[in-house]
Length: 232
Image (tube, rainbow, N blue to C red; front, top):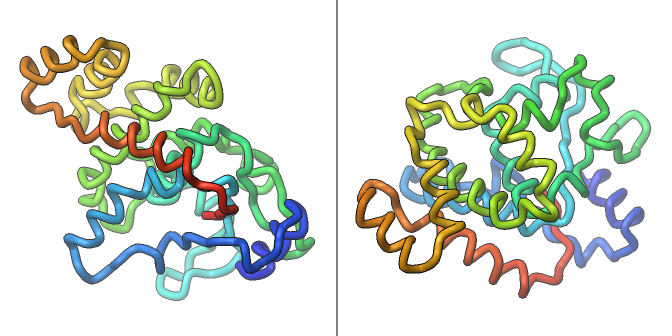
């Protein structure tokens, strides 16, 4: 991780002391359930602010399961897919890298040769189809995925155009009905509606929270005031 950060600084032309890092596990509380869920619900916002997203997944063996862990196993993990969503929902597909420890270089994340032929970007948006140590974590991610989808919709004519198209092509896999019902479509209608129509939709569909609308507003405000290099 240190070598990857040093390489980013050299490649992008800024001093290491100006780089801020969000590390997926250690930057999220693990023991306190309430704090963990709060961190998960802000993951989209945090990731959306990062100009750079770097995967650190050297080929190794899992200490407990003894299974191979590498770029391919990273690509299959549901939580890892969620992190990528966070970056892509605002930044688009730019600034996403895999750090090759053998060469000491940053590689384009969608270089399929290193992870078994996956279509990386297409697979990464299918968060609920990913692998989980605890499958019961899936419901915890509904709100944050909806919030990030709101940010994708907001920029679908510019930076997230490709991502929006990928979501449309795999809509039912991205938003499985047993978790989302009709919420994604309702959210898109709300974002496209006037304030009066939004209030009417919320009144009609009382189960739809306004948190998703708030999240995209917060993201826009936070992004406008953020000027430090950051890597996830």
